Structure formats: C-alpha cells, structure tokens
Amino acid sequence: MSTALKRPAARLAVLASGRGSHLRNLYKACAQGILDAEISLVVSNNVRSGAWHFASSEDLPHWFCNTSADVKRSAVDKALADCLLEHRIDWVITAGYLKKIGPSTLAAFPNKIINIHPALLPNYGGAGMYGQNVHRAVLAANERQSGATVHYVTAHYDEGAIIAQNHVTITPGMTPDSLAEAILKIEHPLLVHALQGLLTHHD
Ligand code: GRF
Image (tube, rainbow, N blue to C red; front, side, top):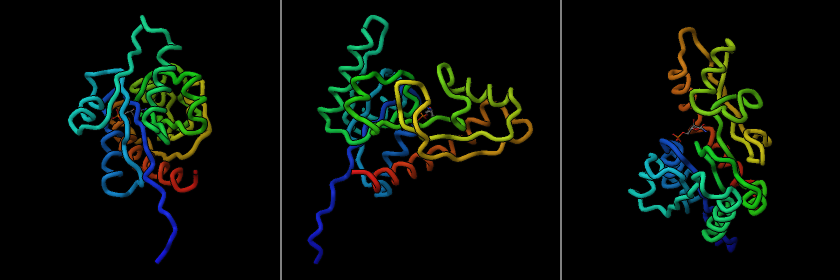
C-alpha cells in the first residue's frame, strides 16, 4: 500500500460579476473530479448576477465585494485580500469580473490569480475590452480568427503572461453575438484544461 499522502483538493475562489457560466462549469468540473479542487469562495460585486444567484442556490460560500464609487479602491482591495486569505484560497479565477485587482490582493496571491479573456491576447485586450466590445472590435478589423486566452492577472488589464489559448475561425456573417457564443464554447474547456495544468504543476 502506498504511504504517499494525497494532497488536499485545491481551494478555488471565483470572482464574477455576470452570467456565471464559467462558475457553473468549474463547479461541475470539481464535482465530477475533472479538477482536483473545490469552489471554496465566490466573490461578486453584483447581487443580481447569475454568478451570485448560483453561489446562493448551491450554498457555496459567497462574499459581496462592494465596489461602489463611495468605497475607496484601496479599501476594496484590502477587504478582498483579507477575505481570500481567510478562506485559505489557493487559486483565484476571475471570470467576467469587471474590476481591476488591487496591489494588496496581487501581493497576497503572487502568480495565483488567473483570468479568462474572450479574445486572442495580446490583441483585443485592455481597458474597455470586455463583452461585446471585444467581439465588435475583432469583427470590425476583419480578423479571420478570434478565440480565448487564460492568463495571469497583473496590475494592468489583460497583460499578464499567457497560460493557454484556443482559437475559433470567423465565418462570413458572424455577428458579435454569434462570435461570443462560438468563443464561449471553447472558453469553458480551455479554462478547465489550464487549471488542470496549474494544479498539477504548482505547489
Ligand atoms: C466570458 O466570456 C469571459 O471570457 C469574460 O467574461 C465572460 C464571463 O462569462 N472575461 P460568464 O459570466 O462566466 O458566463
């Protein structure tokens, strides 16, 4: 009989402001044992979001991050870092979380915060490049392909080192909606695959 100790499932925090399809997909991958991990915390700044609703209905630990204009950015950053540390989080995944991650949180989780972006970075990233804006810009530039990128989060939007990418071919007549839909199909497995690699190769 092997005496090797199995390491405990990684504790994931998912930060999401929107629909929450990545949260649901990651939750499923954990439940099915595809990821040796558990969703230990969901953070959202939007209580009307699908992500918040899912976390509440599945009884996942969830925390409302108040990012309204009357709260100082440094206070938001400190509160987020504290919350993640309290929940002993190993990996932080931002999936449709539209706020910048502040310096305290970045310092508390060096190279442990990753993001999924619906384009082939380094193109079509940066401030304002989210949701339909990305797909509109890609189509306006007559690109032949787009895709999704998983990357480390840094102090600058969409600039951290790339972990994984996959592409989709743009076909005639595609609209921002249909492109978004095609990309979402590859985003879900891409993020799970990237996390599998990270969980296997990191401490
Ligand atoms: C995804 O398209 C992701 O690439 C982007 O935001 C969207 C989040 O989707 N960063 P969902 O809320 O997980 O469904």
